[in-house]
Length: 110
Length: 114
Image (cartoon, rainbow over the protein chains, first blue to last red):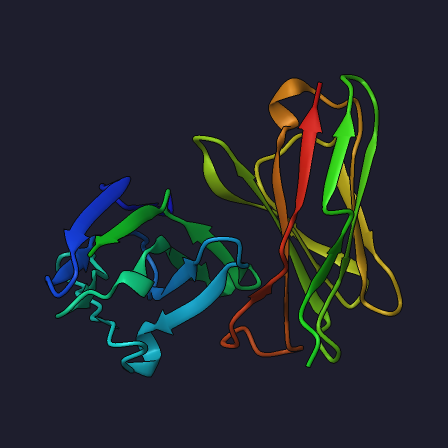
């Protein structure tokens, strides 16, 4: 069955420290993975997608098919990065529906 | 560009009642997805509508239903409400025909069952 796992409910770091939000997936097909972010009192929005191989707001994520992981990384965390982060797997053969992880709350302390 | 809009923002119902939630997609988007974000359960896929038809549904009972109108807006109906239906219901839309395009989310409707 398809599944996305984010093992950390809460991750707390100090400003300037590196950040890694973990995401593991289970899917027999070719995965398409995304990171969505929800800042306080804002709507869920797309942060980045693995096929774009881009860096958004200093965040990057690399798909590792061997480890079935798609961890989100940033070398130097900023206070404005504090938010809820969701990893999601898109099922192309099911109309593009998204399977979300449980989310990780990132708290960046000054 | 106006984003996905959902109404109402908050809906309070009692057990056994029926609830109707509404979603207007981004102009030009024909696919609408509904997700439930319940406490402790995360975001779960509910329904997918495209071109007026229900194309896929998640693991939810039949009392969760909906429809998509000719203008691509959508309604989610929940009958015989139960306490565990209390959740944030999110709607998302996508451009037509291209599953590679990302889904854009609305602010959600918070449904509270008393």
